[in-house]
Image (tube, rainbow over all chains, first blue to last red; front, side, top):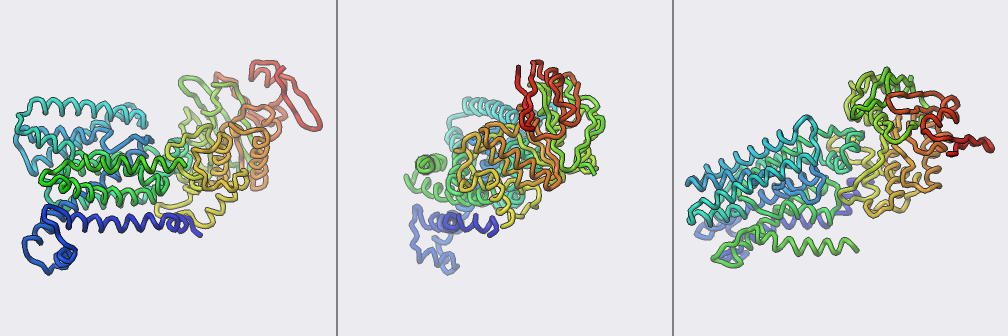
Length: 330
Length: 255
């Protein structure tokens, strides 16, 4: 039996579960909320038979929001997986190299000067790109581009952004603070439906999957990977840019949602192992579905107050992760 | 045609010369050892031969092709390297780790075939790791982990094997068994073996040619008979050495 057949057979239950989880999370997101929608009603809406207020509620509010949660969750999980391989560090997450710090400074700066909407998104994305290019060129130095150098440069640049964020928060008028704070912990309530996100996620997956066996080899270390035919520097630069652009897009769409990018790759690794060819699609699916569910909970559990989604992702993720970690030691 | 050849190879690291104008020709079926004191550049020379670092001068030819003109993938189909150390950041199984050796032969979307899995299993069998395929590598002992690395190299199955201290972490029986497996394989398949060794007696028993690195860029190479004399080895290690011969086995002991 070829290796992929045995691997797929071995992981079949998990793969089926993840494939089911995605549509289920969407149904959950569409049915649950301030106005509860019954399954027959939902079925009617989805098949286009109902044409009233609930139709608009589901198709124009809940569905786009779920789509955004799904794409950003997938992006963050993918970016986190890539960063952990790139830096060969299990503590790495999409934000570790300062991309989100740059985006936050851009977004908060825009809010400070009263810009909103597309301007805010543009400022966030520009900030993320600036940070990404800055870290890349500073870490390059005199030719050596090692994970250690990269992580040190990234962490220091991120700390710089952190200081600027605090500065902007300190000088902002009180009326702006709540919006800023929500942006910083991640917020899906103001986002418009964005097909750009889906396209970027699909491109990210399409670029990553063919290099996923290379990533397996790269986890073995730089020299070993070179000796097995991997052009290490080229691969690292590719991963860096793919992961950073995914992070930049995710942060631009929803702000900083913590935890998904760090924990989802580990969670999936504990279940399906460390073969990136299975790990990457599984992480994308789980991250995406998890964020849809978390966002639904965030907007309903204390309704009408909407909780920041980052609170929910952490509250779900921490116990589940700790449970799996305990179990895996036996 | 020779498998591996150097033309006036100059290697240095951190301003220290390893070798100067080294001209060696490694023919199929030969087993070479690299000996020298700590810091004389044995590993550096091995990695240069593997194309993992650039020489300061000269050329390396693999089956007559200049290493500079080959892609990493082409090189990895000709040269396999066993490294001194490995650090496993994420857990994976013994079988997965061994199958990594097939990477050079697969294209982007390809998965390992049933034959590849069979190759990995038989490599694990050769290093006495049968039955451990689904163990997680981070839970293995140092010696077991080293044997998985050897199995990965056997799965890669390149014509040129470069080993950096292959007996690291191994107990006596496995030291002999593994070097014996490798050197017999090289003879049978007319491949080439180059090993950095600390143990003179392993070199005396399994190598037919040696490169001695004296430090400061001075090196000598030749057949075992020419290289392995008390006088040469004393000069190499800066310590008196006694040569004992018993039932056809050469042994060198520090005096």
